[in-house]
Image 1 (tube, rainbow, N blue to C red):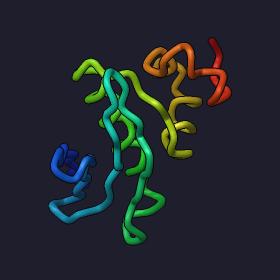
Image 2 (spheres, rainbow, N blue to C red):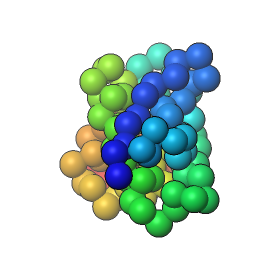
Image 3 (cartoon, one colour):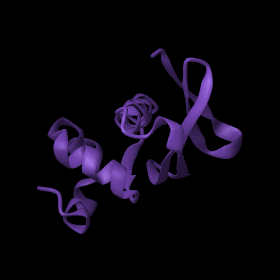
Length: 103
């Protein structure tokens, strides 16, 4: 399955397609130097195929590339960061304890 993630700044979200079909999105809100990742949605037809991880990884990598720190307000994003500790550094140190992440 070919996947693609594109940033839709007008809607403040990253949109995922699978084989050219809309498969999900992750909503964000930018505030200063931080990007709050607030909601992840994978459409029912595409659940259970690891696409949430593809979407979250892309959103975190794009945020890092744009110079943002990430606030994992969405449980899917927080779980991804917890299971991929190399992304913990993307969460502002002052906020890590709030999300149960190591300092």
